[in-house]
Image (cartoon, rainbow, N blue to C red; front, side):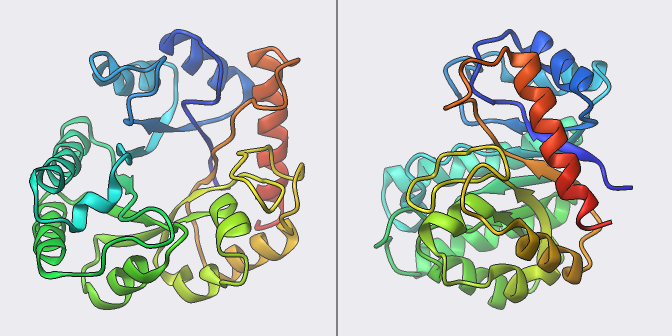
Length: 260
C-alpha cells in the first residue's frame, strides 16, 4: 500500500515539532520538507527539521528547494550564479540528511529566458552532482513547459525525474496531458485542487480538477511511490490544525484508493 504524505507547510503558524506530531497523528506516514524559507520555517532553523520529522515517525519523501527567481538559472549574471548555488546547496543537504529527492522549479511565468548555454552548463553540473550523490532531481511543471520538456526529453540520466503538480496544470496548462507524456519519469507529486484560475492549494475534491482522470493516468503510469498532497488552509481557517490535517488525510486516502 502506498504511503500518504503532506507538505510540512500547510498554512498554520505552529512550531515545527508540534507540526510533525500533528501530521503523524492525522494518519500521514510521509512528509515533504519545505526548504524555501517560509515565515514560520526560517532558513536558520530548517536544518533541524529532518530529525524532527523522523523522530515523529515520518518518512521524508523529498525536499522542495527555494524557487524565487527561478528564471535566473538561465541568466549569465550574479543572480543566476546565486540561484544555481542555492540548488547545489540543497542537493548537498539532501545527501547530508538522506533525503532521496529534491523538487525544483526551473523557470517561472509565461516568458522565461530561452534555453541557453549557461543554463545547460549549470544543468550539467547539477545533474552530475545528483548522479554522484544518488539524489533524484524532480523538475516540477510550471506555466511555460519549454524547459521541462527539454530537460525530460534530452537529459539522459536516471536521476532526472518529474514532479507532477496537479494545481499548476489545472490553472496554468489545462490542455496539457503531462501524466501521459512524462508518467514514466514520475517520482514525486503535489496533489491539490483549485478553481481553474488561481493556484489555491485547496484540498482535493474542493475545486474543478477531475480526480478520476488524474488518478487513472497515475495508475496507468505504473507509479508505485507516495501519494503526496500540497495543501494550505486558505478557505479552511475555521478548522483547527488537527481538524484540517485529518480532513486532508481523508481526501488523500480517497485519492490512494483510486490507484490501488
